[in-house]
Image 1 (tube, one colour):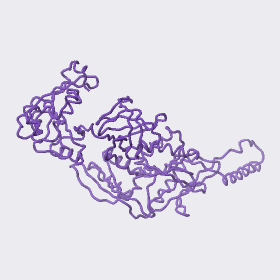
Image 2 (cartoon, rainbow, N blue to C red; image 1 turned 90 degrees about the vertical axis):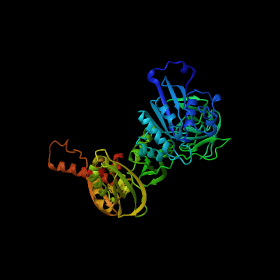
Image 3 (cartoon, rainbow, N blue to C red; image 1 turned 45 degrees about the horizontal axis):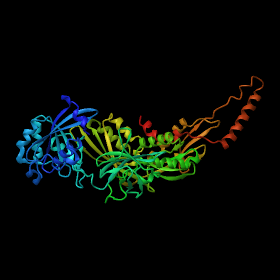
Length: 568
């Protein structure tokens, strides 16, 4: 914000900006100019009036700008003073001469387009005038708060019609909603052991002050805002936050369910009529089991997951039990990396020792989940990517060339084929140039079998997986070989078997660690040595009968590496 100090500071020539606002009539140009004057402190709030730069009575009556006006604004950014010279211009076609005069005095222009209407013909004409004057043009999508706003569509329209990159277009609303009932959107939160839940939010409408009683609209819970502030970047307390500002809030919130990401904050005494749209629910794509190694840590794991879910709305979980693993949780993640990060955070931040089972997807009886996947790739990698789709039981749907050198390839394939290294393979085969997106389309019938793993004769439920019958042997063979590498050798022989029902389809064995019982037998008759070896063999038989094999954590994730290793 500009201050009295700012106005006294000398502004270097390099920090002077002369700019204009290009917009069609009624696209919010004058409102935006008013907001700039107010935010820079050029005009105080008590002096502020709508269409401040429109001095003529006729301009105010008709709500249009007829004569160009100039306003000098001072602004401090990063402790440096800037001088912003705004030359306000008409938007109506009849006053294009006024526009051409103002643009000749500028180095840049804000191209303001109504996000609910799009590019108008007069806007296009003024843009061409700006380009003729070699101006730097910054696209601004205004009125994004309107119900009919379509900023994505309008941004694409600007790109197609004008040929301007709108990937970094400014999206805003110049309308002042500070007098409306409070509505603030929670976009993040975390749990502080001393202060409770700390909420990060953006004020969309109204104002919020320290000490006010607030209400979370989704949960209906009411609290007193003990502390509010801004992030700069550390937390700094303030007494009030206005519409458009971003800040944090502490209200001694102990229950993580009371203040979820995407909820709307309003005043308890003067509630808003409707909540903000919030965020769409994230759909988990990978599911696995999380079990504490120590059964006594089950409740600690539950609390940790609840706290972690507070600022990770994509994490889903529900209790489950396993005869082999005990009590734990079935968790849903957006992908494999998301799963690994959650596991790391649980172990590091909450001091938990966990076993995470091999990832899987949801099945309905004998039906395999399916999805549509679209892959974008340079044309020289179409062959390898189509080969990947076919390998993963994909059904080719269509291929379109977006540009001369870039194509879109669409496949339908089982979600189970996505759980492993599909994305890694896509990047590898395209040298990093291809990208993908996918969506669920429902369930498809498929010839699936349950592949069980037995270690030393005991089934390990956590290693069981559902695979296509055609791949059962190769997966079972690869999995038993991988487990042989990962499981430490014992004092007895340990068979590792992959089974479909009672049928063993693949088998490996860990050889026993042999103790040298003859090391102290320095001579004598051969019968003495045979007696020692026989005694050792009898001991190993007893050990095998009651022997227990500890399976390391890496073994539960071995199934992830099977396809990657088999394809290299």
